[in-house]
Image (cartoon, rainbow, N blue to C red):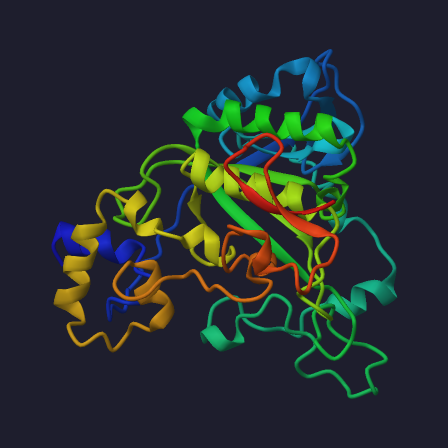
Length: 355
């Protein structure tokens, strides 16, 4: 495999007819410590890993600026943004010397109710083995049938967990302005992001550039937004849907964010292949490896710009992220009381707003 083929195969979306053979090598034993500090740089006792994590008000600490450098200072750093509370949970995570005591006091692993632990315990699936047996949440597969007295949280037969994730990588050079735009939205309606905070806020992680043709082309900050989605009627707007969609559209179109290939709604993949400077090189490798397109399907052809579009225009399509509203007539027959309106900060956005 030559370098071009190798860089295409690193992120292939499964369309190259390539089976990768991975060689696993051992690395030196390491210990990492997680800690955090408040605005006075003094520790408080919210234990995480082997240290402490604290809450810091982002307005008073110029969070947009700090986000640019925080990841450079700590090898495994990330943070949770709680916008409506004006707080950030900084996770300072670094390697430490091997002779460190390494107190294993990670809070999810503290003593808990035995009955609760029994519900989530593994049944002994191997860590190494056949892929279909490597399941981190597989205890329900062989459990007793009890007329749904117990069930997986995501079991479709019960009204359990149901949510959606929008996951986008904003180039680091745009992060400060993007975060400041989110702050502006919070000022307009301080409570709107409480729907994200029910799922631990906005998780932000650092990603670096990659030589992969469909990988990240520059350093970026990964934004994970997890929010409720109705399973009963997808045509019913979500609470403060216009605010969440404005953040999504702002990231994709104003700041040229790249979507996570395995998540997101259709609009995040609209013309996405044009954002990759090596897209042509990837498609040449694809044509050489799989000229008949046996490993492609309609969706991959659409996101790779080969055939058709990811945009689907139909009644209520914007609520599912299948299209972007252009006029009120697209949804007024169903959504009485809602109209297509420009974004409150990003005026080019078109979102479904209650009037």
